[in-house]
Image 1 (tube, rainbow, N blue to C red):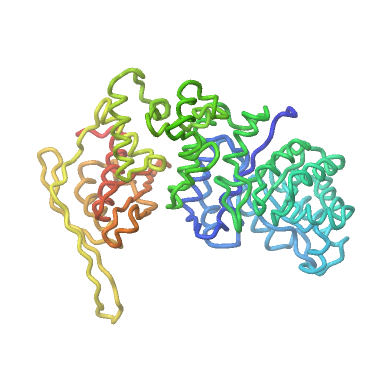
Image 2 (cartoon, one colour; image 1 turned 90 degrees about the vertical axis):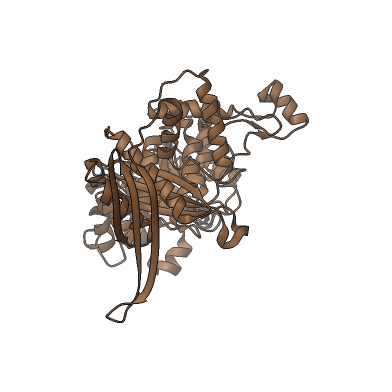
Length: 530
């Protein structure tokens, strides 16, 4: 390990889940974990086993990560119990995670008030727990909760806590600014002092954003010697959020000369991953987000735009393509081509950049996005759009019509139920099908009716299933007549997951458009013949 290597620890799936209005499903967690792994993040914290059913489901079917270490989060042993006999620690060890991150008290005030135990006993709780975690897993990490408040109140005790964790085998001792109240100069000074006792190669930082300094504090800690940063995608987190890894990573790599697990190619996917997270959460991306926002490299008409057209360095601190973003000049739009070509390379499409089909596709994407489509979180729909424009995609079937009905009634047992039924008429080659199916809601009924006709012809669809469904209102001012965007995530028995999008003023029609892409992508990927 060189002194220029900084390790990235993502806690979006746990700390990010504490964001007001954010509610990850187990499927969300799996998809995000895979994206983080592909990006080059070193550690992905999956959640707290035993704390809630969602985290339990996630760890029960945890994704296989190729590069990142999957970690589980928990707390040090309780007072009066041995580490071997603590149910919280047992749940962590049984999770199957390769790494365990344990949080413990390092502020004497909290030890007195929250735990009600002597300070020496708190240190022993840390020592026992970290020792057992280091013995039973690949890596043990210790999160020093409220460390900076504790250090300012009682530096000897706070240092004793982190030294106990390090001496007990913690790979990383992470200093937490839990209430986000510490400023960059304080962070840099205190981390530097701690680094005289715990080597920087084993020292991490975890900042909250309550003073809008979480990114600055994290970078200050690195300057002081820390070599791990904990944070979340897009700065998710309770209250004002956590340190935003999407801003931290390019600042480390492009501004400060540090190495991370991301290479230059992965850095170009940063904008895509940031927006993909927002799509999964069914919320609009922050247009003004540094590095990755739509407006991060946007220049309005006038002096700025004129200067940028002559030399982008005038008003741009980096080339937007380095992080997968694009320049946008409102009065003369010149964005998009390089980004589309990069996406082509990702999905294995080889095309000459000067091919006029590329410009036609770019125009089509812009037109569709103007009407509500978004392809950042719907890679399968984008791939189909690109292949149709460049080399064609077979029409595996032709839908003649569909009808969906919902009936709300009392059944024979006196229970109020809602029954959804779909009728489809479609052609597959020279074969004509009319199918009827029920489902748990209109979209599930429509999906079942389509499969009922298609599966006898296309065996590839037998292991395909819908795993997530999201609806977003694009024109809230239109009330019940609003245009809607539907995002569907599908999966199959081979471990593939893919997302598709549909847009319409009718939510069922938008759902069908997304379903059509989902089925078509699966058939095309599996080489189905018409």
